[in-house]
Image 1 (cartoon, rainbow, N blue to C red):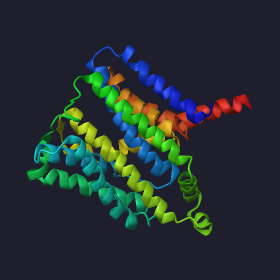
Image 2: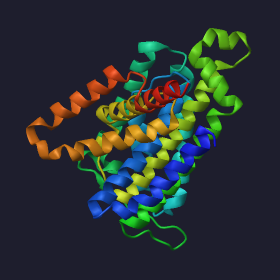
Image 3: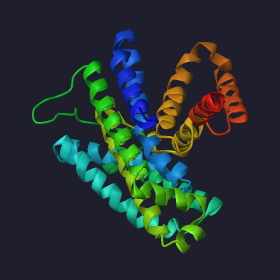
Image 4: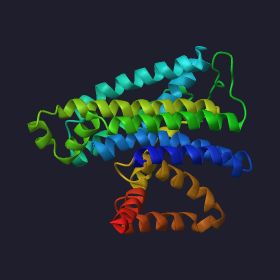
Length: 310
């Protein structure tokens, strides 16, 4: 069994067994939010970990996907599935238009450009109160599919879990394809990749669009699950949270994205009993992991066992 199929089988097993140990609606809520965060982080890891292109504004795509679904279903009474698909298409087109100029930048210039993009999206969501409800937020219609409406936390858990498994499967196939090899070449050296005939800008734009679409779809699911949206879902701190999840779990590691999302979603809840010391302990844990595991959790752990086996 390869690490790829073994990891997929282990993730599927964990998802199947989790409902046996979850005891209440709060546990299901954390699991569902973890799954949605992991979907965003998978797309972001394709961009940062494999293509080497930083983005500090991906929460903007997450929030846009959520708001497009909310507006189309609540104001214009669209079918939720059609709203999700149209939202993903519109945001993919927006990402394509944005990507071509900003992905010509490198390093901190690229980081600042994506940060500016995220701030603009956040401002629009706050100011366009006629459409988005402004800072007060807006309600979202319940999700339904061909007359079926998911009700209860368990149903939502399986819905998000299915989409998460599909996202992991899609990302694994992508990184083990010629596209994945091209992305790793771009990450290693754009000049060398270009010399070997790789259209570096094309591949960077492609992966930027894919990551934005994944964020949009996760945002749409979040909107219908939560039933209410506020512009805080697209602010700068949310983008930093997504990047931190990717780095913590492990760059260029699809399963690491899932682990990073799980830890940073669950840990604040586990530390809530510490009250005033919660953020102190939380920050200490993150610093410790980055100091002693600079490659991220999963690559460091797998590297350790590989070295021991040799």
